[in-house]
Image (cartoon, rainbow, N blue to C red):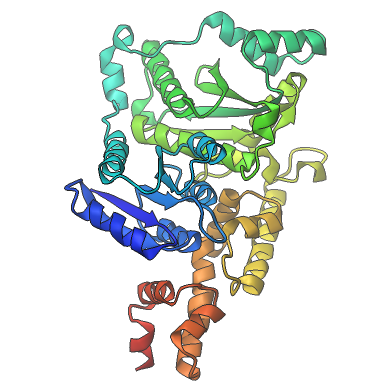
Length: 441
């Protein structure tokens, strides 16, 4: 059964859509409602949400921003956008971020339920597991392997900076469909567990694992990214992603966040469907095909850096201050920098947790690292999920205010950073097991 979160700043619309879903007969477990993006993000963080249905124009955080942040928390959450305006720019942006549909208000009930039904069916679509792929044999596998010549030429662009002048590299890139002019490189290194490790005479199995992984990569890239994907080594793949001038200049789209969403989604799906772990290295974004070799080395370095973390798998090159070190940093230096980041984040949260609409992105920006990496470091060093720490501080202060003052519920909610007293009460009861009113009594 699937859990659905409906988000709209008009309570009547939330109630109406929830009623439609409840009576639909679809395979739905829980239906949650939120009246703004910040409330919605709390549900995404705390509940097992499968489908997000959100209005696009809501107060401080619009539906596009909510979709972006929800996917950073859980990349597999699917989204349907609803809007009162048929705005092409918003629709294009939503589809590029992976929205399953873009519906215009007033909503047609059947159209809405068809859209939800289709999104749920795609989630439920059976995907062959690794064993099934291996049992099919290469001749039955539907994946079309990249042409060897194409893969070799793409690899040359990444690994041979001295070969040809800049103009020649530009021509070579254009011939391979890489017009750019902005590029990033993602590399994926597969790790086959011991129980799946093929024997020396089973090279075919290794080849099928590669096929299967590249098939998943291409499915996730389909229609949402302009990219070339290919093998670079036996169990390593590379993706060259590109943006033209208009795409790169699009407002409200953080490209690094998009790359991280893609990286986490790649890792999640490869592990889910193949049972394989992988390490994902993400480069920065640079302008010009002449920098593809630089981007390739950045992705390699990010993966190499990631080797020291057994429980984290997606690494962005820009998350580490490489320029501070003449050579690759030692384990001690990595630890020192990590501790510094976490202490700085704690200080920022302790000073700002009462701020309405505080997001992980703001905390991450203050530390010049990505939200995902900051969340990982924070949990590793403190034992708390980063947002759990925000809630802990808010709940401790609100409890003290309930017990020691005569402030009303809405005043306490306002003081600790919640816009809605009802939402504050839900969080409070989930945290303490009793409502604010019950605690006061």
